[in-house]
Length: 114
Image 1 (cartoon, rainbow, N blue to C red):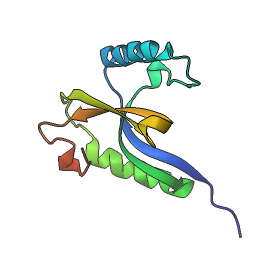
Image 2 (cartoon, helix red, strand yellow):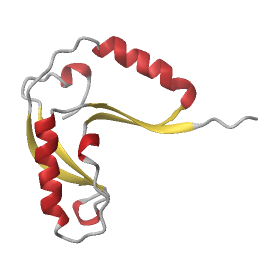
Image 3 (cartoon, rainbow, N blue to C red):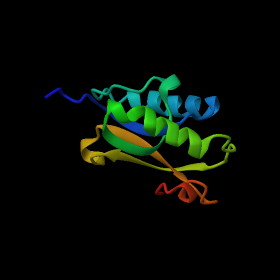
């Protein structure tokens, strides 16, 4: 039986350069803690909308097509960054995240959670 290769995937959107710069500045301030941290390179900072988990590579093209069809031509929207958190917890952080305030419900309209 052939093995099925999987990839850990998420749905994300790019963010404006000025926001990436501001978040990079936050990384630099947090970096003085001397914690053993691997920071995301500023050019790779993004807004994750949904973590899909392990997905068979056979399904990636279908998922991409479905997302392209759903979001093609989506207008730019404004939002505000409003909170910070960590996975799995703040005391045992592996991933730091910054949340946003979807005041107009744009993302909820597509089924994404706050």
